[in-house]
Length: 494
Image (cartoon, rainbow, N blue to C red; front, side, top):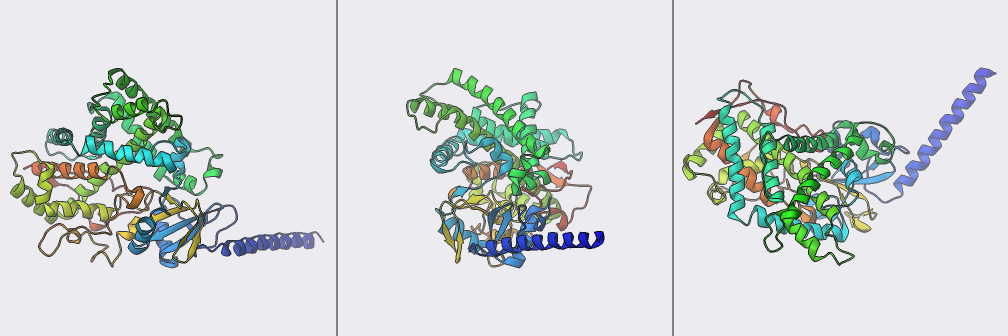
């Protein structure tokens, strides 16, 4: 009798589970969303995503479900869009519908809609317009700010000279340099590479990115409500962000004491002037909180991605030394070795431009973009996407689209050269995203990558004791960022 009762209980339990699952599956199918793997109650498609390899999981699912499919993060549907045509249709052709920012829990649990990167609505419009204009004024529009980038590149060259050809990992040096350039634009000053507070700022920035890309961060992205109750390192992102804002607040306080309303010297000055002008407007978005959080967003978004981009570039040149030889030839012919690189040189250096673009295409620094969100109930390719649904656009698949790139899985600078060897644009290049939510600092980033790469190669030949392969340079598609393998190389003076 006891055995019979136990079997009966098990059968009832299994029947209930099957009923719940079948009911959930039927409800899920009736929503009119794109196809996708059937989610489980409460955890959604958690089991369909390999933790620690989130981007790669998205790519594999696209092979089964096509260019538009649905995943469930817990109870919430997520739309994934793949391929050049589909992403273009969403982010360019229907940019108003897909123009809001989606959730990135590791960071948004701190920013809560303030600042620039994860803001929406009127706040985002005002922060983006102001930031874009000010970054252009202090990062592109003035010769003195080009000089800041040139100066920092020379500092890196001098540090590499000190190594006397001994192998080193350049990642920390690049992080120092790109962070200093941002400090110059934001605060009007740079730091010594050994400055304790500066090193602390860089550590915080790197930790926020590491936590976002970690397995813990990926699970938090999928199940944010549940993970808010579970202890773990993902909660440290908030405390690190708080430390960064405290650091920035001290600098802003110093800037307030020296502020000249008629002569802004940097980004913070310009923002403080806007705060003063709109202080009597109860609806103003120019507040101290938005200033601090916008600077936080710029540090998180700009410094690590640039450092990673240049690390990928040098590793690629170690794998393909013939490409480095061509770059050396172009640099010697256009610039020589006795004068400083400037942005005007770029227009006479198509091969260098092509290599930089190919690195960003092939290495896919941000493989599935920062999440978007639809601003209203939207029809897309025959499917109904409800207002407020998060959307992931897989740039890593756009950059491997065989209709746009002749050898999509090969590192090939010819993707950006015409038949005459001149640089050509490719609309499928989306390293800085496209549409309303494209990176506002794209122009500054392009300038930095060009000046740094050409300055380094003007002075050094790259060598390594280790023989790297194409597999070493291929993107790993693990987390939020595609970080290259750890490596060392020697900078041999030319």
